[in-house]
Image 1 (cartoon, rainbow, N blue to C red):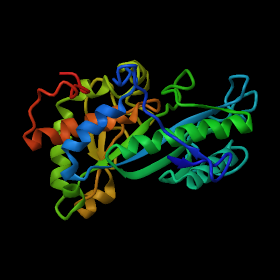
Image 2 (tube, one colour; image 1 turned 90 degrees about the vertical axis):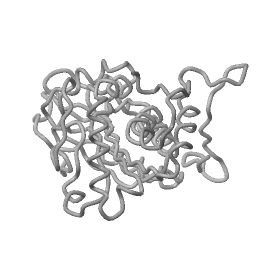
Image 3 (cartoon, rainbow, N blue to C red; image 1 turned 60 degrees about the vertical axis):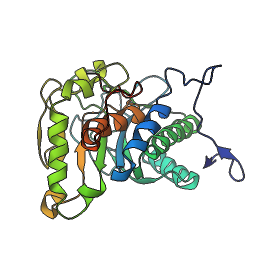
Length: 293
């Protein structure tokens, strides 16, 4: 439950799970299964942070603010200026609405394309990550509704050889965050490397189809077909941030999830692959198969 930034106190926004008449979660309700898995790994204190990219469009279906000839197709990440950035007031309005609501939003910036933006949510522990990201997305669409624009979470919002939209997931455990944690980060990346194809099947809502056109090994993306990792590189599947490598502890960044991913499914897959094998848990839990074998 969150404070309602649109009708203000004492009104609330309530995030609800949906069940059928037999009290069974409907097919689209991934939260209940995520809760079960997070309960199994709670001793690891899994933290998550997300970097949610999105694109703004006008009601005519064209990128918001773009002149008829289109803006220069050069990177404008964190840029400033009316000729480079469109929609800053929308980004700030969203940020303030999330703060009022109590969403754990902690940053925002202009992205690679004019009218493409990003906001960050976290750190959150366990299932809370999905709760706060879904509410942040809802608030984004409500803000855009009031301001007469459309926010797109499409992985490939514009056709052609042009930047795409992702939802990078930063992940850590208490061991990774502690002194010497780089060892545990590298072990987790090793496990992720063994299940690349399986993860991609749950990293977008269409079983990998969206990421197939997004992950093209250029424009800050990795290859859809081959797992890769490196320190401080933007063109890999999973990276170790430079400051994490220097400090020797921290978190890993999975850059593969698409902008339209279901965060409950993504974080559940991460802990299943990286942690459940280390807990001695049996694999016979019928609710466990987020990441297909």
